[in-house]
Amino acid sequence: MHRSFEWFWADDGSMPGFDAFESLRPREQNDFEGSLDHWGNVEPGQRPAQSRVNAEHEKPLVLAMKAGKHRFTAFREPRGHTWIVFGHYLKEGEKRDKTGDRVVARTLLARHNYFKRVNNGTYYDRG
Image 1 (cartoon, helix red, strand yellow):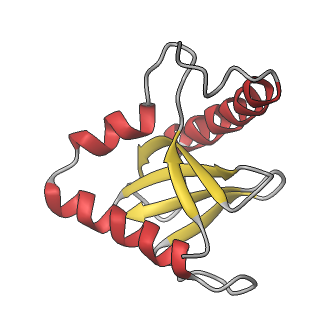
Image 2 (tube, rainbow, N blue to C red):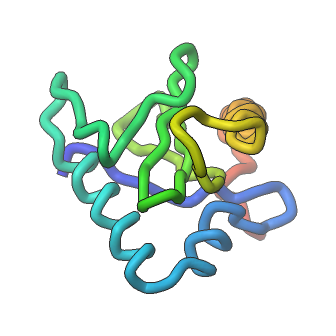
């Protein structure tokens, strides 16, 4: 594997992406796990299949891993090849709607929060 994945931990101890994942039917969960497996095994410098992974925001990069109509947003941890899976939304049409836009915006805020907490040494401290 070239990439690994982990769920985002919010300040309150919740994991929004994981909570959404758990609410999916087993077939949808398997489809999402297939997208993670695909992206995790794509050779560095190669592009993933657009049917599995899509860029939702360019700078900073936010990706969406796909499971049918379900999208899970993720950002990269800068010191390695770990992607932090944050949010979830349903994509109903060709283009991302306002709900998807809000999830991407929240993902960018979560990214900022993640970096701040990691730099302060508090992100992984579950005391």
